[in-house]
Image (cartoon, rainbow, N blue to C red; front, side, top):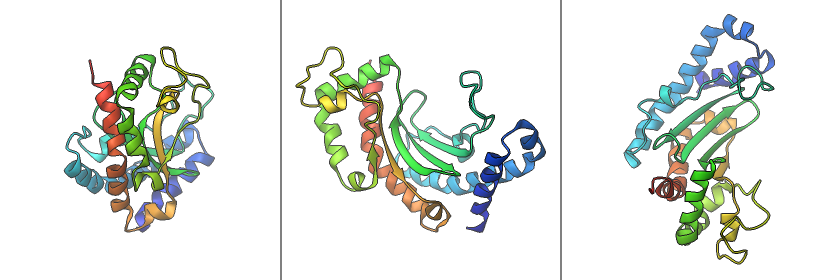
Length: 218
């Protein structure tokens, strides 16, 4: 487990020295830290594919998000992220599962964050007809105990085309359908982290499946 500490040691220094010059001088350290993330998640990915062979990422290395921030669209952000993000999912544009290893925040999450209007419309249509399935998932254990369901940023009124009295109005108002499970650095450094990820994925998979049924519907 000592090797995993290298991940956070690197991220803490990157956060304090967030510049291209520093990264260029410490590129080997970055690669070493990234390799530790790969080593951590390669067996996790193998286990995840046993319960969900639809996962498209061929390797843990391919599941790691770029550490560079997109400065073209967000010029106010620092050059580099202060975290490693690892994504497992069924394909581009679909709901997925995410693990965040950061200096200030560590978490597991799943769902879809701020989908465009076309995808949000599909999700709302699915909620309109099959919202009871999503409600059942959100109220099931261990999901309900482990995950915080995001309601931040929801509409204050009914979306266009839906009644304020709709049975699932609270779900229809949402702009993101996502849930987060807070974890600690101690969790990540522990022997039980592998099983923790697998169990969390299994708990949130029904929600991900609900969303992807909607998104794949033509």
